[in-house]
Length: 190
Image (cartoon, rainbow, N blue to C red; front, side, top):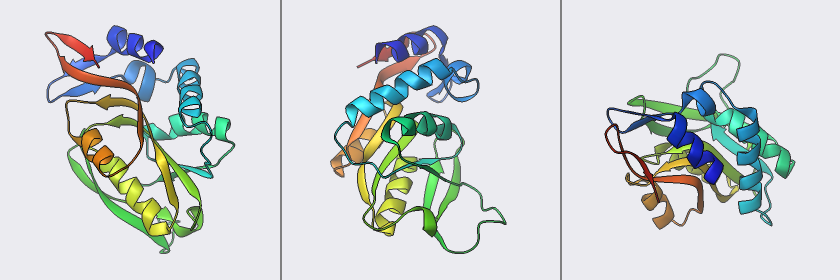
C-alpha cells in the first residue's frame, strides 16, 4: 500500500532496538483518512471471505479494527491486556509477550463475544515477533471459531513473527512489510 509506505518514510522514526515510531499518524495521533484507506485495503484483500467478527488487542489495534469493520458489517471485539473488575470470570485467555514493551500479558475476551463456528478476522497495527497474533489466534481456536486470517498494517519482515505464523498456515495480509531499518539507512520495504 503505497500511501502507507510514503507516510512511514516521511514520518516514521527508527528507534534503538528495532522500534518504529509511527505515533504521528497511526497509533498515538490518528489520521482517520489513512485509517479509512487501510480499512478499504483489508476489505479488498479479504473480499469474499465470511467475517462474522473482527478481533484485535488493545490498544492500538482498536481504531484500525473499527474502521475496517464497517466494510465487513461485523462487530469488533478486543482482547484486554489487564483484567477489569466488571468483566467476570467466564473468559477465554492466552499468554502474550509484547515486543515493544517487553512485558508478558494474559489477554482475555469474555466467552459471550466469541462463538463456535463464527469466522474471525484478526487486525493489528504491527507484526514483529508474532506473539499478539498468536495469542488472538489461540483465543479464536479455543472458542471453536474459524480463523479467516490476519490483517496487519506494518510487518517487520526482518523479525520471525510473520514467517512463523505463515508456517502455521495463518493467512497474513500485511500492508507494508519492512525488510530492514536503521537510523542511518532509513526504512527499506520489500
